Amino acid sequence: MDPMAHVRPYRGIEAADRVAERRRRFLEAGLDILGSDPDLSELTVRGICREAGLALRYFYESFTDKDDLVAAVFDWVIADIAATTQAAVAAAPVKEQTRAGIANIVRSVAADTRVGHLLFSPQLANSVVLRKRAESFALMAMLTFQHAATLGAKDTDLVKAASHFVVGGVMQMIAAWLAGDVRMDTDQLVDQLAAMIDALAVPELYRG
Figure 1 (tube, helix red, strand yellow):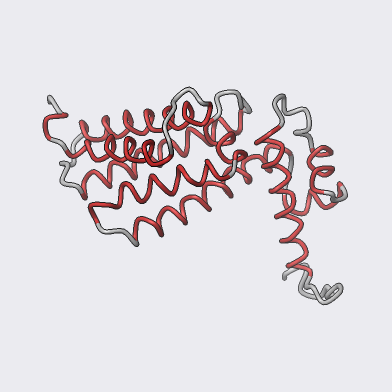
Figure 2: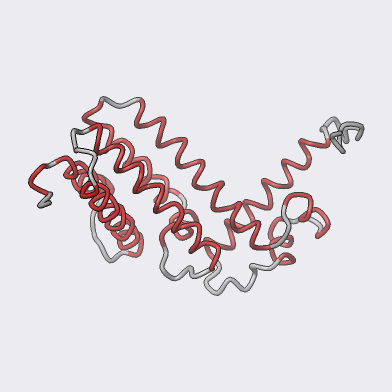
């Protein structure tokens, strides 16, 4: 039985909606800290509660501990970017899909410095974030491999290897761009990244 099924609305807001809103505030607070606190001194349960402006007891409605929240923040950010990127790709002609997807990713991280820091900054060495980045890297490599197949690349281990290589380069290039080490405007960066990914379909790339 749903434990909130018989909880009366408060000020016209259902109990489940109040819990969801508090969870959202905790996620925003976690993103604020992960995306801007250089030494993560505030990345504690109490620090997160202070940032969210919520009492300690509410934290445990949605999260078991600090690491659970960090993982949830990362998944929340990735899910949003994945959804908007998928929509951008689906709306573009086949030959423009790579650029459409990359453009959405680049503009998403550029628009919110917290997101860029969370996903790409080498200074952010939180163990949960590093684990989640590795998981997302593997997923991106798989999706890149599948995209290469739509461009005409053959289903071989060579293409898989190249997909991992390209995704690693893409992530490093975005990180360097966000840090100011690579000086390009947004369109130049997107064009370069899209060209690198589309090159996966070039037969001369493979020597096996």
